[in-house]
Amino acid sequence: MGLPEKPYTQAEVIEKLGEYAKLDADPYSGKLFTVAFESGVEELRKLSHQAFSMFMDKNFLDFTEFRGPIRLEKEVIDIAKSMMNAGEEAVGTFTFGGTESVFLAVKAARDQFFIKKGFQIPEIVMPVTGHPCYEKAAEYMGMNLIRVSINEETLEGDPEAIRAAITENTAMIVGSVPNWPFGTLDPIEEFARIAEENGIWFHVDACVGGFILPLLRKLGEPIPVFDFTIPGVSSISMDPHKFAYSSIGASVVLFRKGFSKMLSQYVNMRWPGYPIVNPGVLSSRSAGPVAATWAALHFLGEQGYLDLARRLLQARNQITDGLIKMGFKIIGRPRSPIVAFTSDEVNLFTLSDALLDKGWYVNPQRGIANMNIPRSIHLTVTPIHDRMATQFLKDLEETKSEVAKVPPSEIEGMAKGFGMIMGMTAGDMDYEAMRQIMGKVEENLALYGPELLKAFGMEDEMPQEMALLNELFDSIPPEIMELLVNYVVIEIFRKGL
Ligand SMILES: *Cc1c(COP(=O)(O)O)cnc(C)c1O
Image (cartoon, rainbow, N blue to C red; front, side):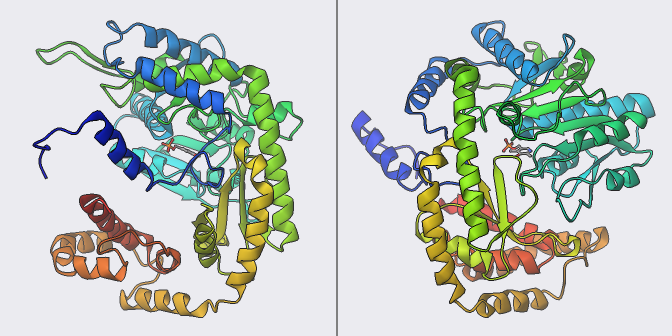
């Protein structure tokens, strides 16, 4: 399909886009407990759209030409700094997402390590619950990442496990407030002490928590301090596109020292063109997100955010209580907006599918058997859920009793069989095995790719029933599953399923 020979009219364009938009989950429905951070404030939504479009066409690549966004960024960063009790010397960068913020912190930590220790392969150490963007950054930047065990009781990070994993090559320690899977908080003060004692960069991942936990603390919740008042903290990431309810594509990374930001930026004056100075990973970028962030922060203000935090808390507590009453087990101590629960009675993957049939979006999680981390369902609770919690609990209770009647054995059996055909169980993989497999991937995919898609039920549509896939994810070594998923997703996008 090339460009249309006959251009669409405006009305046709909008109509067609409307059709595609119908394929999406509705972020304003309040039925998403996944990656939609919805305030439920109608005026804020309109204002964000307006702010975004006012700056959408301004290319922040050239901040000498487009000066407004510099001012917007400074004021957004100032607010983030004040929330993290940063000193005068601290600096920050507005980025397009938590992953980009983390990349900048990792790059600065890596280069700091090179300055101190010379060129050896630097390592990142973090609890197993840390976000995959650290592995991604490590892979892109030629580093290693070590995931360490957590406290089995609380599912919070374990300082002793961190300490034990530190070597000569450790360039960075990461702690999350909270982590994404379970919403539990790592002991930041203890991690910071270990980092300081060993002269290691310490990054606090407050991507989810940065804009909400300080408010929950103000409301009397037991939230420990995790900011720059702790001496060992080198950098902090926090995402306005999460609990500042900004437009998507908005994050902030803060550095304790100006020099750290210097290590994170990219400057190039070696070509015949204009000087490239990129504070972030991207070069050309719209100033829309920084404007929408500025708008949200200023429109809601302290009172607005506190009101939303109150609503969120009420929804979270109602949901948590409801889950316990229904016989689910809450994982860890919920101190953040994230609640994860597990069950011995029902298959959680099937439960998650059945909830989707009722229009509810939740994230099933596989856990890690050899670390005693059970399967669970993850809920991200946002302010809009205060009006939805009662309905959700009612539907969940119904769904639970429906699912309890389904024998779990069938899909679990199929998945185990598939794992055995692959001749492997988790833990078998090493670099050499991986290298051998990668060497054969290209030709094998050409041969078996279509079969694989058929097995996934993805020849010409996205599967609605995810339970079998989730069982598969759980019974095959992750490295193999990564390859399969990698291939399948290329096909999804190629076909536009
Ligand atoms: C969301 C998140 C990130 C970054 O994710 P993006 O999708 O890139 O914004 C990093 N760490 C944690 C703990 C997160 O929840």
